[in-house]
Image (tube, rainbow, N blue to C red; front, side, top):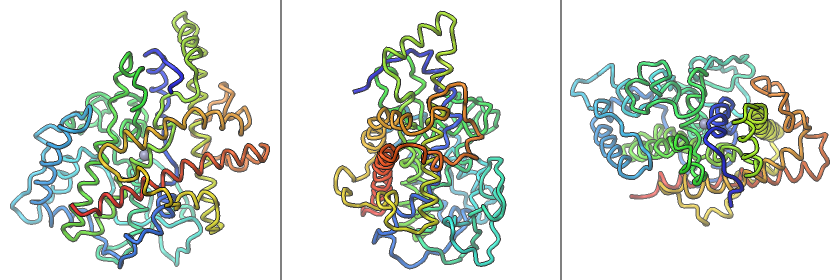
Length: 449
Ligand SMILES: [Zn+2]
């Protein structure tokens, strides 16, 4: 049962602030790989890397039909789906070598036209480089990110090069965070945003680079009372349409012999499902009681805004702490190469794959994010109990971008062993779902139709 009701004012303020830190699960590739490594479906000969240009040129007529049918399906079946303007429909050109085919394809998908989409794989922490020169980050992501060569895990691959399916799908599962959904709203100051039909950004600050992807990577499907009463803008999220779109493309690619793109689109679809397993992507303000929310709002209306600002800082800090801890723990597990690490065990645990696990278009809303929303309050309390107050209970110390320098797995060592073990059990439970739903996406793509 949901413990709270909130006013539009508090929600609007939080929704504005929270996505500024919405990095989602950190290290998607580091989690996708153990989740899928044991699947017989991936035990196939390597695939041949294929550029997007080649795929789109080879498949243009089929893609035109697929995307037309998919748009009709989305309009009829996805709640709150903003229809793609008909002028953006993908049309196969009769001329070979149509130089604008890829931009027209991205436009029909309403993706960021600046998306890099190079051929590359992400190496796991500690993997040998064998002299390979990494791909500059600017060739991977549209976001302004820096890295030394030693820390850069992205290795370019060549057209036609043999590559393992697991490398393709794991790498691709992180890719939607590299700018694919940036600048798509009408008020993002981009030309594409004027044409895409998504309207104004429903939450998040239009002026912060990666916050404009938040409505594509979060889904507040279980705030019903609040949403219906006051905050309809929270319904304007697009995870479901992304999952459906990339799942359809993956099936088409496999069916037409483009296995590289079959796996890459599968990884893209999996990303959005994985994001919805993160409780801070499935609930707006975990951990606040009805009474507390109402009191904060009363103070705010009376002109005392501090309590509202404090609530936003605290939920943002806990979101950051969870993702930092998870990334540090999973990176360390890969570096140790210990298959018995409880987080790796949880990710590959297929013992409940038979239960509620078939992935359907309704699963993201009714299973994946529902599970995450139900876990949110308890997880929020666990974080508060485990970490020093300055990180999770002190609203005067916003973590912000500086949090990347922290290592929450080290900081957690100060907590009693029982608290740390309980946090790891909670995290393992979340990652078990992450693994189960990731495998379900792969099975759904490969299922005969
Ligand atoms: Zn994401």
